[in-house]
Image (cartoon, rainbow, N blue to C red):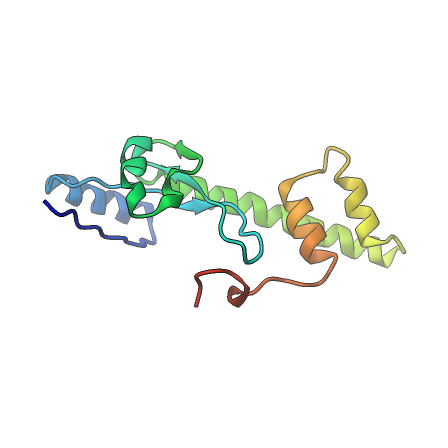
Length: 153
């Protein structure tokens, strides 16, 4: 029997729960598995799945998308993956905002932004956001666009 696949992008946790219940009533599985991680250059995407369906559902579906089995984390019930992804983005955005503010203060006071972020990366302020978004984008002033990412239109 041929398997059919459907990919849905849903905007709310409650709608995801409704969709999952409808699928389950029809004997189908669902995996609430948003992708996380920074895309590095043009070489491809690194992915992590914040999965609701558990590693069993997600890895069974690897034939559909080989990225689905990279660092799977079961975050709980339906919608937990979405919430985890949103909170991850919230912390990232707030960290990048703090880095941009720190660079602005540094510039106003004659401190080299690259030196500032390099120094911060050696202490407790170090983070993924600092090493990637801060050093690669904020200091250089070069911000990737959708056109610079693979598989985007």
